Length: 116
Image 1 (cartoon, rainbow, N blue to C red):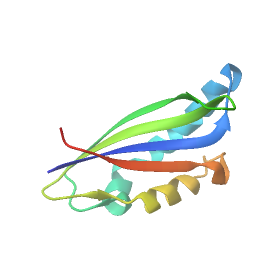
Image 2 (cartoon, rainbow, N blue to C red):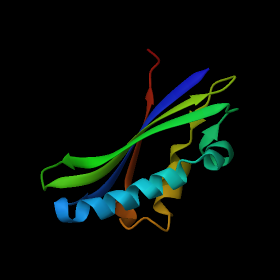
Image 3 (cartoon, rainbow, N blue to C red):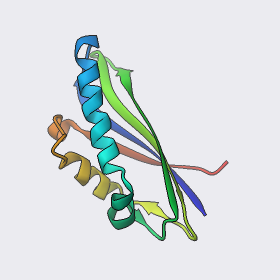
Image 4 (cartoon, helix red, strand yellow):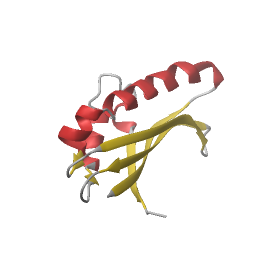
């Protein structure tokens, strides 16, 4: 059975071209470190997991004040039965990461992606 999730991590901070590369690297490292196989198997996914695939994109999203740094990820999980992604555990891991320079401004959004 396949389960897919969309995850967005909003930093709550706007960036310009001079700060983007460094901050995007920090966010990418934080997300890839958190969205690793050990965390999926032991904390983030409920249910038996056979395979997990992440597709990660870091970019700037325009808002009313400027351009916010946002990380977006699609997580595809395959297993013998239904699986669920634990958003509270994911939020706690990201907010508690030593790489989190955004503190409590960090906002995590999770949505199930329907099968098509």
